[in-house]
Image 1 (cartoon, helix red, strand yellow):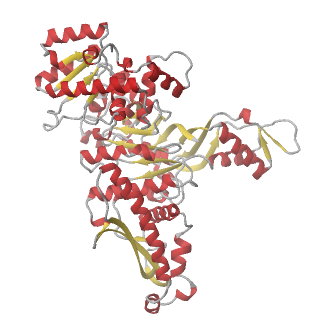
Image 2: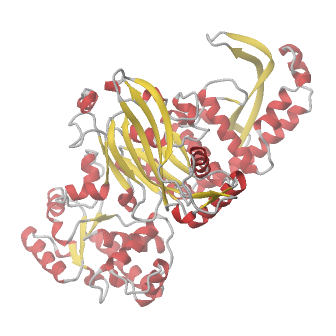
Image 3: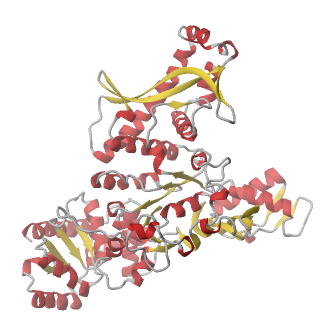
Amino acid sequence: MKYEKFRIRNFKGIKDTIVDLTGQAGSSIFAFVGLNESGKTTVLEAIYSFSPDGVTSDLLGSDTDIGVPVKDRVPRHQISSFSGDVSVEATISISSKEKTSFSEAMLERHALTVDLKTLPCSLVFERKETFKDGDLEGSSFILHTLPMVKAATERKWRAPTEDEATKIRQVLYNDTPDIAYFPTFVFDFPEKIYLTARGDELDDFYRGVFQDILDFDGRGFTIEKDIVRRIRNPDMTIPWLKFFSLWTSHDNATKIQHVMDRAGAAVTKVVFGRWNRIFGEDVRGKEIVITFNVAEGEVSDVAGNISKTNEHDVFIKFQIRDGTRRFDVNDRSLGFRWFFAFMLFTQFRVASTDARPVLFLFDEPASNLHAAAQQKLIDCFPSIAQTPNALAYTTHSHYMVEPRWLEQTFIVTNRSDSPPSAVLDAVSLDDESLDVQVSPYRKFVQVHPTQTSYFQPILDRLEVVPSRLDIQRSSIILEGKSDYYIIRYATQLLKVSDLPLVPGLGAGTFNSLISIHLGWNLKFFFLLDSDKQGKLELERYRIEYGLPADHIVTLEDLVKNAKEIEDLVDDEGRQIIAASLGVATRLTKKMICGFFQERLASNSVVGLGSGFEQKSRALLDALRERLNKA
């Protein structure tokens, strides 16, 4: 199953908004972009509260697995007077195979036959809390459309009873993806992690992460069976001084360390392997070592008073061994700690074959890291968001916005018109005026049609000001997003990584960019199609702006007989694209562009024949040469 859409109503500052995750480019990566105080975190919290996973639920201070505590969901300006429903509604797609599995489960568990023809392909679940005068009156979990059913002795289909409806909803819900939410503070890697019921919510969270590591090893190890049991067995439930003297000579310590060594080897393989692929660094000779130690048992009462107990505790530490030296992970740089924690959270979770699919939610990932590290981070998102998993994140950094995912990017504002003009304005906004809205980027662009760059609305919404160190960078300005996607595809296919491509919004929209180019003496190079409009606009730009001939050309100047970017794809390439799309009719420009966009977004670039590669290489070589002369 896969989440298609969320509708959120009366959740904190959200009055009523829809988050459509169906996407347009085949990827399962979604970005929520907005300034501080725009409501991005609120959007993630609302989505998370629909189906919070057990590992991360405690992080938000909830006593049960409900995500954000119910008392904190009410619009804050109506905390004592709100009457109405706080609702999170999820639309989830279900495949034919999943329908069949559901039908078999209902028959086996509840002796109930389901008419699959009456089960829609999109299921709508709703979690709802009803309040009156600020007080919670009740909670409900609803499946809006129920299939027809019949018992073993019945011949005709009928509507399910209330009890049967509950069973149907629960069996379907059990197969929906978990939602894992990672607030920023979980990346503050702890010095030690208690594996017994000691510590705070962060220890509970990291215990779940450590169990994921044990599960990945495939030996069936568990924290309780293979670690805690050996420390708290009846023979070891004795006063601390006696325990400690006995423990030092007990073979259980060796058995536990064997479990730690297995876990350390798994982390070394997965984390350092991924680290090498992302950063290109040679990590040979380095390994992750997980050590454990015991501590005198402690328990605390409701008032927080601590007393000693004969059931003693165990904690672990993560260390990096480099030759003969060892370093605690929490003593390393902030950047390393962040990436190390991020990989622990994700790599072992997605590697599990038994777990439910996961929608990962990250709030401002890597926001305190430098630009290069942020860009490296989003390079590893596709490996996490592979089907059936998905990933969504918030950001106010333009370095965390990937152009190939723009069709799956959302603009978040805290009022229906525009964001406040200053940070202090956002802080002092009257709560009643808050109206967090989530707008798909493609819809947002329609409201701002005069923008000259395909992603300029992102930069404007984030109020990005070019750095004095950035504006000297060379750039290739393309006519539109089709040009961008196809040329970007060619760079990945041919492993060319040094071409800075910027998509425009059409042949006639370069005026502002050319003005900036001339006024700031930037090294821009403009590429237009060789069709009638492209040639007319090229001549106009040269006359009106005195643009040098080697700063603006048409596609035909670089690749013979190529009038439009789609001409790079010959008959062989079109056949490959048609087969991939399952299209038997003639390919349209929209289909071709959609193919390249989807393949880029899902990070699945494939060859399109020798003709495409030959023309693409000629174009990329010519672009690099022209850019160097610009």
